[in-house]
Amino acid sequence: MFRVSVPVNFAAGNCAARTGNNYAGIICYRSNNMLREYISSNLSVALIAGKVYKVGFYAKRAPNCRYATSGLAAYLSAGKPNQSGNGLIMQTPQISFATQLIDTTQWTLIEGYFLPQSNLNYITIGNFKNDAQSAILDLGSAPNTVCLDRNSYYFIEDVFVEEVVENLSIDGDTVVCTGGTTTLTASSTHPFWWSTASNPTDTFSLQQSITVNPLIEPAFILNGFFQKKSVSIDVISPPAVNLGVDTTICEGETLQLHAANMGCNYVWSTNEKEEYVEVKNSGTYWVDVTNQGCTVSDTVNVNVELVPDISLGLDSLFCLTDYDSLVLDAGEGNSYLWSPTGETTRYKSVSIPGNYSVTVIYSNGCSNVDSITALETCQPKIFIPKAFSPNNDLLNDNFKPYATNILGFEMTIVNRWGQTVFNANDKAGTESLNKRMHHKACMFTR
Image 1 (cartoon, helix red, strand yellow):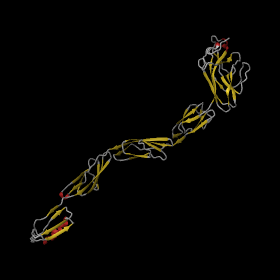
Image 2 (spheres, one colour; image 1 turned 90 degrees about the vertical axis):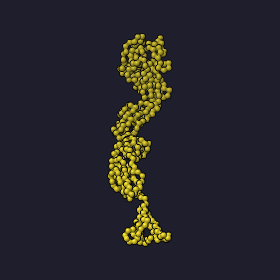
Image 3 (cartoon, rainbow, N blue to C red; image 1 turned 60 degrees about the vertical axis):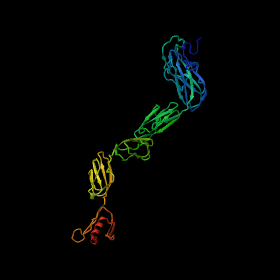
Image 4 (cartoon, rainbow, N blue to C red; image 1 turned 60 degrees about the horizontal axis):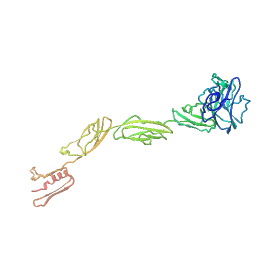
């Protein structure tokens, strides 16, 4: 009597269970004898037609068996399949392992997906191929093989039948700028394959992520067992953004940077969101312009040149009759223009009262302006003779007071008794005073 237990199995060799404490063993080939053993069981829940199922089991070759075989498989059926004695069950299994299973140390997972066309309630595991189809591999006799010297013997563990609840989704940008690419990533609970809308039945890729050029192929399909997800990629013409070349402005000036594109969104380095910004400080300015998910950026450097100070001084007073002089100095510069007189020199002499301004252009191209008001103001001067001799000898015959820089006058002459002999009151100023004194001198007596 051979001992059958876990992990010791008569002459098959020791094998620990993959999980739990038990497993099954079956003969999948015997030399010179078409002998097959199968594991068959009624499913606790029948498979429903039209639903997808994941079916699988783990297998390991017994250490002391001489042969390895291919074709280890699972067959799902409506009712238990018929087997004639210990012979071959001549059915086509839905899940199979194509190559010889040789490994005696690791459990091998054999699994697949199945879409039943009718309701099924039985699973049977074994080799459904005849000897010629089984690709038998002779590994040579092992010690203590006894009856396994003619057999291909396998342990079977952890059989499962699971309904597949399929969820498909596609992640990735579906809006691409002209000339750009995008990466589409599949998400699925089960195997899938990519195809293109132009060739929906051909496998484009089995990878989870694909990088595609929408100008070559704009639409893709993610295929599952019974679900499909489609995605189309839109190509958007990028906005045209040009902030211009690097620019220099003068202190106090404002530069307007434009990024105008109708229907776009804007993000400036200044945190403003408008089509344009006004800048007056040195720095690097950039803008991101987004058109339906397509973003283009541009950058410009702005340099601010300092403007030298210019001062013509405070408003000035001078008197030409006193031989005063007023010279205005516009300071160091490259060129000058005085207004309203048009001189182009650094210095300007003022001889006429009025408003004067100068524009100075410096070596950095910047300019500055200053102005001044020059007023003529002279102190009044009055001269009154102390005596005259009106005797027609042509010497001191006239009484001639003299005054300059006055706005008007009033003069009264009295005799020795205090009686007024002459009076003049005139706002006409110095010239009128001099004329009156000249014409009235003949009236004066001692």
